[in-house]
Length: 524
Image 1 (cartoon, rainbow, N blue to C red):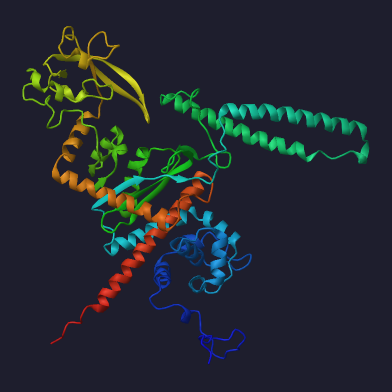
Image 2: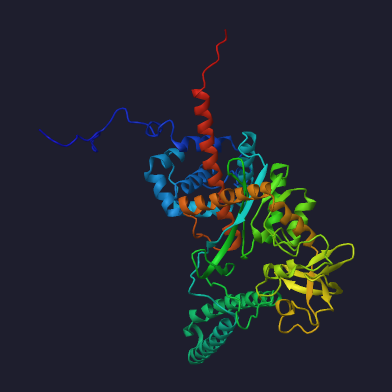
């Protein structure tokens, strides 16, 4: 008696009634819901990209996009892996209806439909909004770091490129001399053609010159931001010059991009996504809010973001957009618990409380120890001395130049707090500076100091970080496959669209299961 189970089907057996592709996929398989959602979308803008009458009959864009999106949902990203899956995995075979799609077709399709992909992302968001899955009551914004498709150990600086250009010019001159000698020794049809090595240095020279121009622009930008380009010069990766060297989440530096996402608070769906080539995403925060308003025809009622978003432009922009904004800021005014907070600023802080006055990073009295009088346009120090308006000055900050209004105290001589207040280079009295954002920052700090404000902002951590955890951990988006900022933006949008489709499909399955389980009301 044979112990082992018999095979379900003989490989060489000819069958009269063979199971169909549809029989191979269960009724509750996720690929069915994905296909149903995609069939409900409008693909006219995609189809308009095709000629319609010449060449081989093309594969419908719905099928191509479906395979790419389903692949992302299944952690399959590369074109070759997609090609294999479409030929060997029953769920992919069912989705593409048995079509044979090679990796080159997938590769070209992935980057061809940049604008139609934006419209598909918008369609899925609108559908989710109709179902109540997106409500725009609150939105959390954040960015992350994803590695570029370039080596972290091979980078160029302007000095290195200039040295390489010098070597290349010497090599080209030598090759040209050899070509002239060959031409002189040959005659007529026996003359040797131009050496292929001459063309290669010319192409390399063009690439190096473009990189040098980019590095010089980057060095000037670093100088404007207060960074010495001689000590820390700008660097680019030859494989992807548009990527920027940024700190990695796991430590060290590498060519990276900064993807961003705005997440709706109702069900955690992404309502806006973008990619930038700078470490700080505060410069695109308002653009994200505007795109949400454009795509969904209304702005979110509330938005939360991390500390980096608390810039002057963002605070003012959210005020004008009438969006309830929550972001941690350093309060320019004394907060509860600070002895400098007193009803009469002309009265000094009690000597017993001097040790409790907050210090800054230089171990001197912090700016929050000084009270501002808006009516008199002056500050009062912890001892009640006045700091009068001195003069405005321009200062460079990341993102541009700002105006600082300076206030100086003329009564610092023989002050008992001088050693705790004045720096070693301060000879003419303590100064305090103020910029145009301080009233907004004071208002924001007061809002986040309330129990309600802290509770609202605490929700940001889960909302903003969860999509990045899924995209990186479950979908494998830890390094981009494509190169160049525009292609990387398209790749990130594919991933965010797949993320939303996955959540939408799960929500629809749950809604249908709930509707099926609900008892039918008795007509009597």
